[in-house]
Image (cartoon, rainbow, N blue to C red; front, side):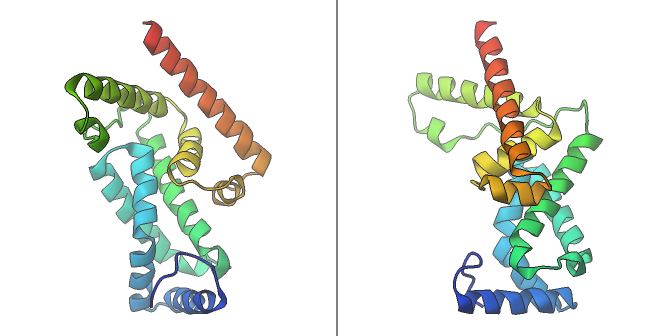
Amino acid sequence: MKYCGGWIGGACVNEEYTVITKAANGDLAAFEELMRNYERLVYSIAYGMFHNDEDAKDLHQEAWIKIYVNMGKCKDARRFKSWVCKVATNVCIDEMRRRKGKRTESLENANVYAERQSPENAAIINEEIDGLKRALCSLSPEERALVTLRGVQGFSYAEIARVMGMAVGTVKSGLSRARGKIIRLRAAEREA
């Protein structure tokens, strides 16, 4: 199956719906096809919330296990992408809660853009990136999920609301609070 990236156009809808239905009925080949089509999305959610490749890989795998076990619970194949995002986000939130009080920042400091800059500019860019990561790590798991889904994944407010099981207004106010916290933390760091 050639993946079209979502529910656009009649042929793609029917083809993807068929694969989702087969996977929900236990067809392993169909499930593997869905995994190939959505694995980047699941990994990027995990990486966006943990900023660490190893954690992201582990959580990616855990999310796919949960997706496989619960395929029958995805009642509406048209919302499969949102359901996959919800499962991945919940796996990450659960892990953040388990790690409460423990550092989850990455020791990795690879930034392709910074590496292309002069040493002075690279240091400034890396310092800003590290500060942003610290600010993100200070957010609650739910706030970090909101920021990741909006800022990293580019989801609309409505898509985030479906994934997180919230009203659109709650998503907007949660994002506003999270952004405010990030701005205040970054300002306090710069003043220190």
